[in-house]
Length: 393
Image 1 (cartoon, rainbow, N blue to C red):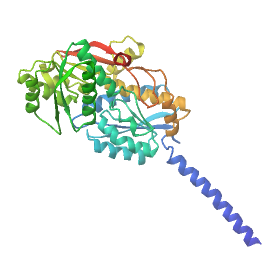
Image 2 (image 1 turned 90 degrees about the horizontal axis):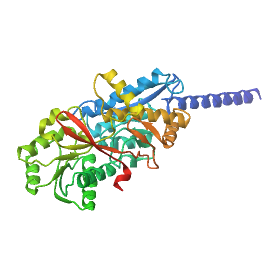
Image 3 (image 1 turned 30 degrees about the horizontal axis):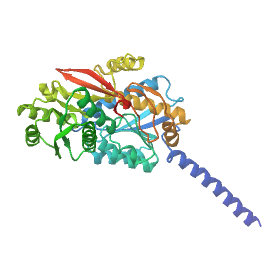
Image 4 (image 1 turned 30 degrees about the vertical axis):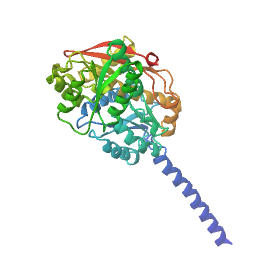
């Protein structure tokens, strides 16, 4: 009898120990170690901090760093400080997938911010979705990004709207009826934005007189430019990144093509004018916010950014900044900093007042926001028009 009682007691002790052990494992790993015992909220960041698109990542990271510094200085979120875990995608979509796995498994972040380039976000999103970790893209505009899962969000406008807005701007505001397109066939952002512009421009009554694609790392665009030049367009839509548009513009001007070029947010970079010289004079591209807005949020951000980095911010840094504050809001709305709570909180974000505008997260986890069209003049960028989503319907 004593042996039986001893055996039962031992089994009971083992059961209690097992429950405690399982509970301890759940707190350390699953949902999620990041809102942690140490009173920290671990946010993963994956961006192009080196490679051909490094300007995208570096400026976005500046905005993220500024927001985190402000939040931590004011006491954190619910008394918990934010800890960033940043990884470099080296401007490669496949690398984004690799670092996403590291952030989700080894680093056990509660939420991730990234990337700028849509191709990278599309590669990384399924990793975070499978791990049950929410991901917030600051500036990936391809519609397919948030289609990767119900934990994938963004705080920027989408390419369907951006393409429609650029087409309407070219046709209605600039008065052009004949357009050509040059785009990167192997890039999700470029290919998608070209398609949205193409269909919208035609629907407005315009004609696409030439449509040219390129692939891979291209150092000159002589052949593509010659083909477009022969079609004599009034405007050329080039939905490419800043590293390519300088080369494209130079080849157009070398061949005597004077038609203005028009692009999306991928042109944005402190190096844009440096790379393109005078070849982009009088050209236009889309931007994510209006730095001339007198709103206190915008002007406060501008002042703080200049003080910290001793340079002018851009819309990518502003989107990185807004992404962090949107996550802060989500933690407050969701009631905590676990991955599940942040996901739930992000779904509840309504009328969020950010530097890049006031927006709500819709049922598809996207933000509906205006686009600001800028004109290049020398080394200056001047606002031409702010286009609201309702303006292109």
